[in-house]
Image (cartoon, rainbow, N blue to C red):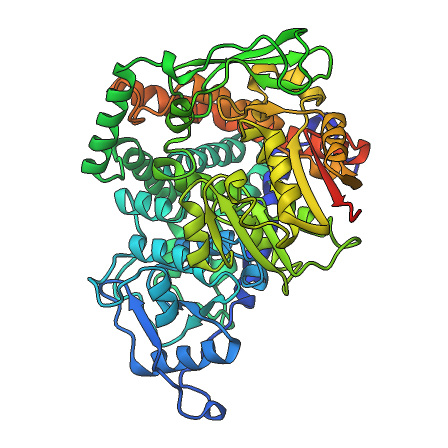
Length: 621
């Protein structure tokens, strides 16, 4: 039989079928990797010690003593301090959703992985609960609150959190969540309910279209989606026994459609925030704006802060595309040394205004989610030291919440990591154990106190935020011991994408980035301070967000968050526009991810990305 020409192959159906097939196999494999608690503690464990452990359960879930003791024995045997328990009758869609998010084989080892669970029961040591500020004697949580708690506890037990199926545990009548409850659960896990609901509805519409228009291939793709719950969770060997699995499978398309619609509606009308806190925040912004925004910028300077030349040209002018706060900002380029800097730069009042609610407060959770996805970059930074040093002490300047230090422990388990930052997140990093000591304040202010104490100082995407980067390099030279290493990573203002994307190039990052210096300038400044550059990386430092960031900034420009406390206030029209922009942007984001994948591969092969790393040794003479 002659095969059909390529132009007649129903590629959409074929790709959907391949994606669904791979997802089904992956979910089945992951399910087999989830450990199962014995119904009673193993005899070899002796009498399990329940002292020091607390089992937190959602309302309506009543674990039996044997399950609690078996969980304690398993956790102690595995060296865990947090253990999420999956009921044996976990509803099908909840189970599939969890298996999409978690790879049990890697979950514990991934120190940056978000804490995930079923939302019914979580076992934790009293020590972890105390450090996390959790009162185990408080009111019983609902599943959304327990999901948020699991996520928080993982941060305090980064490499000691696990999952296990508890055969003796039941959901207690708590079934599939829908509408506001489902939206709340997604938010508790750091996931956007509106975008996910839109993606779910779009996927269902695509499946229906191919089933009708693309013959047997389309029908096969739709049928695989339909049967997926039974294919993953069915069979006598499955450790999970969802109640009504057959009914859930038969009704899956209709139930998914209804759940998507209800979740989208709930996401559009629900604002999950403390009303009093938001009101106070909005009042503070109104007071700031009433005083005028001119005070947020200093007078424009006429020369380059790096070399002193007066040959300046405008690189780009942009509004605040990050948060949508009022103001317009200019980056100028020195024609002599190619240094790019904000001119006029933010005043101290401006820094406070534009940084507020970005890394903490209202925007802290979202920023934490983004930082938590940078594991590969953090590992690359840490591994850059491998050929050159075996440090006992490391100070990470601009550490934020300590994400890099937490990830770098997998590369340098015997190194003491300390962190320094201006934000309160450094204190949280200390409580989590991600840094040993957290210093709160400006780096130059600590230089004399910490003189000669560290073998490594790192500044990853920090110098570009500072008002006086040369003073920061002076502080690093003071803090490092002779022969110590300074590691720096910065956006590269000479990247081709800076010219191609223009104002939508994410690393411009206005108004936060004050200085963007070419690699040649940094090498010269380090040499002037007694450093020798021993390694430099461009391609490996590339951050694959050029196209994705451009789409995100454009979407924010078209439709800023209607609930932002510095805005005019939410209106039905603004909410509708935000929803429409989110839906329309979904295919744009998908295309951007594909383009960034290609762009990253090219950047790493040609050593020409949007950032660079430099490692310099402090000379001993």
